[in-house]
Structure formats: C-alpha cells, structure tokens
Image (tube, rainbow, N blue to C red):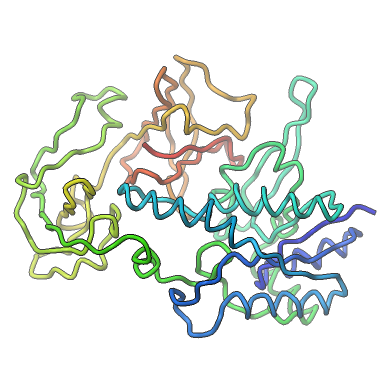
Length: 389
C-alpha cells in the first residue's frame, strides 16, 4: 500500500484531501506545519496556528489517521520571512505564498514526509497533474484546478519536475461547493470553516505591522505625477526593450502632496494607506523609490503610470517547469500569462534574448511590480514562471 503524507492546514480543502486519499486506498498520515511563533502581528486575538492545528487533529481523529505537528518556523523565518523583509526593503513586491510552496511545503515538508516513508505528499491545492512521454522520459504537467474561481496553479509556479512527481492534488478535479459537500457528509469539523486569507500557514497577518518589526518607519515625500507627464525610459520606441522598460520618476517631476512613513511599506497600484484626500480622483501609487524614500502617485485607475505592455525576467530568474519547452536565444513564442493570483490569463508574446526573457502583452497590464511572479500557460497547463525585474 502506498503511503501519503497530507499537509493538513486545519482548513476544509486539506481535510477533504486527506479523506479522499484514504478513500482511494492510500495509507494516510496527517501532518500540520507550524510556521510561526509571533502572534503579536496577527489580526485575531486568538492564536491562529493553535486553532488550525486543533481542527486538523480533530479531522485526523475522525478519519482514523495518525497525526502530528512539525515545527518549521526556523526554516520559514530563514527562507520566507527574511526574504520578504529584504525584498520590501529594496522596494520590491514579493509573493511569500509562491516561495512557501517551493521552499517549505514541497522541499522541507516533502523531505520530512519522505523520512516517514511517504511515496507522495498531498495538499488541498486546487490544481491537477498528469504525465506525458517526452523523448522517452516521463514529464509531469501542472494543470489548473477544475474550479476556475479557486485555481491555485499560480502559487505552485516555482516548483520543479522532481517535486511535482511526488505531489497529489486530490481536490483538483472538484468544485469548492463539492469539497464542502463531502466535508459535510463526512461530518468533518472544518466543513463550514472560512477560507484562510493569511500568509502561507501563518494565519491572517497585518502586513504593515509585520514589516515594521524590521523595517523602521522613515518620513518621506509623496509626489503626485500629472497624467500627461512623460517619465524617463532608457529605451524609446515600440520595440520589446522600450515596451518592457520601467518608468523612472524624480522628485521634481510633480507636486508634493504630503508625507509617508517609508517607501518600503508601499507597492505599485496601492490605494489604501496614503491618507491624502482633496483630489478629484483617488490617488494610486504608481512607483516607489526606496533610495530617495519617495512615493509617486497619480490620480485614478487610468493614470498612464500604472499601465505597461511589457516586462522582463532576467535569465537567472527564469524557471521552466516544462524544461523540454525551454526557449533558445532568439526564439519567440506566444503563451497566456498572469502577473498575480486570480488575474485572468492574458495573451503574451515571449522573446528570449541574451540577457533576459521579455514579455509583451496583447493588452496593457496594470501595476506591474518588480519582485512579483509572472507565470505563463498553454491552455490550462502552467509552463514556467519568473521574478519580474
């Protein structure tokens, strides 16, 4: 009998994943990952990991499977939290959930599962996988979940073939409503529990307070850029280099509108937290400069500073899940891509050049932020991903 270790988060999806694995004849072990100790930055007064761990344990008892908690907080701090602080400090926008899947769930956690004799690990992600033969070798494909509203393939965009070969996605073929129905029928304690909104396996975190643990507040200027201002770009024209160039602003390019507490606390596209009124349209962050500690804002969602057709990923930051589809220098291919979770897929042309992989979208993209992940797909298969430069 094959053994599966299920990452049980205390939510309904991983609870049903454990049930389905047992139903399919696997020997199942439930494992809860404790990733965080500091409860001072969580939104609820209760201790979220304790509550989640308890719910996971109750589900395991109901299913009659062994259960244990593993403390991965040291690895989580080192690989995820420290990375987050560093990225924000440099004025970038990290995605800790993507990193958590690559570094914690399907690396550290997977190794623990293998030490327990597991053939596979299973999670409650809304994804699917299958395999095909390429040049006589088995190649695994990561596919979007059947429930398009819950598809979580984007969060797994950095995993590799070896990791994917060991993962099962029991709820990937189901709609969320079907998952809740199974949980109700099995009388699982998590059946009606709300979905977690927090960082990967931490609980709901107040991001500003979280960041202020290490990044100190620092007063700086908020500068409004007029809609008709043309920002500096290294290249000009309609070529791939120009279209993917970042806009660059200087403090004297606009009017000072107020103060902020630190450019590293803000990200492109942000509207809340500026606390500046008196403009005909709401102000949005169009850029941040941590070197001069300046935030640049523009009025309204249609401000040109929020929109760009292109971006680039440096070659060192390009990750092909489908290694057999890796592009050669000079090659061009059309895919669909997204730059954030839940964003509808958009048609994009990829250009592999000597320094980087360039992306030119059919339509302008809003608030492209350095540090985010772009993930590209063919139909519902995730092909690769990269960190936006």
